[in-house]
Length: 357
Image 1 (tube, helix red, strand yellow):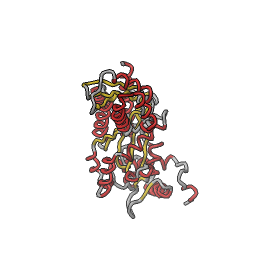
Image 2 (image 1 turned 90 degrees about the vertical axis):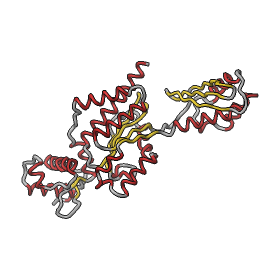
Image 3 (image 1 turned 30 degrees about the vertical axis):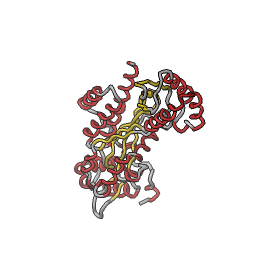
Image 4 (image 1 turned 120 degrees about the vertical axis):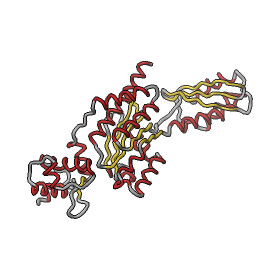
């Protein structure tokens, strides 16, 4: 066998591609190593068993297949899955019924992004039989563009903040009564000094300037600025939703024993997954489905899994993402089509809502 011909990355013959695709399709369907006998009887191949065995041996030498046990059939390697996803996969077409189900359920939740994401991952998990994720990524720079102060009673204020297109409010209680004339003054000072600043940029010298400008009402500055910083920091933290965690139990060969506990810890802590989704913000013009197979994932816990997700954007701004986590032998074609359609559906609903406003 010519070892020079078996270097990874070498262009495969059409027959090798056909055999590799047939093996991966069968492994995704059954979860068992695939042998030459199955390929010649069920894999729609016209070549002989001997030829198939030789091609399988070469694909293994090239790193696209693995043999888990002596005399067993082959299973795809990560390189095999990557080639499959990049160039061999059949494009899955959602049925009209699936499309209508997605559209119908998304429209019911058009009023709010959080509700749409919840609906989307429930649909994704149910219709793919894998664990679904939705994320609102961390924002790199969160600032308040507008402040308003409302007086409820002499010791209670409502701090209203406009962060991007989202309005956040926070109740502020004071020990000292707040006169009516202090409220507009505080609003003006906050807009003049803090508008456009991140929490880390609200430094002590700026706080001292605000206290000087407030004069006899300087006692209001500390509790109000504390409320601003806490709100901005919480807004910056990102959110992660998960649906269908129990579906991991359907794949004991991947998520048995400690691996299941590690995956549950990953979903519970959320930090590592939010880091993955938040990095999507760097690619402002990238609206493609993203696929990370096995050790391509930057999170070690996911080295036996595949993550498929697509960003949700409003214009060039990343506002969320929808994805699927499952075994490397997942039904890639269907999952990619489902995530692509769901992400586009949520993005379109958001843009339609913006136009109506």
